[in-house]
Amino acid sequence: MITKQATLPELADLQQIIKHQIVERTLGRIRVLEVEVTEKLLIVRGWAESYHLKQLAIRGVLDVIGRSGPRPIDIDVRIAVGPPGPNANIAGGWK
Image (cartoon, rainbow, N blue to C red; front, side, top):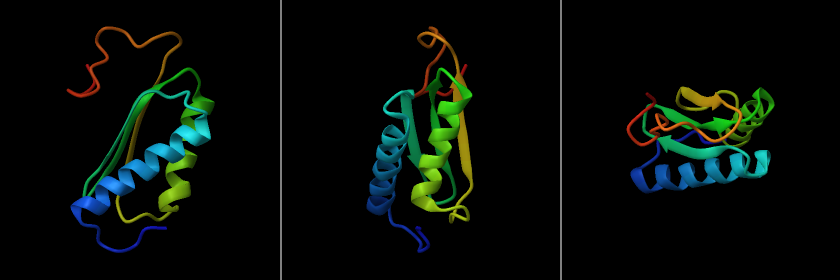
């Protein structure tokens, strides 16, 4: 569990660790996966074909930071069968 105040390189490392854990938990089935970690917030974005995959992604985050992590978590994993539509602009936010 991460408890100390993190610096920017540590945040980038944490971001990669969380992303890896989500990929491992979901067997890579979260599409367009994006993890962003700031000093105040942890954001996970992506697309899944089921709510079960979304739950596995959440479990992956909690595996790394624990239930009472140092920052709030925003899980924005959308459920969609098939590929994300043309309005699924992850980098610029959801449309």
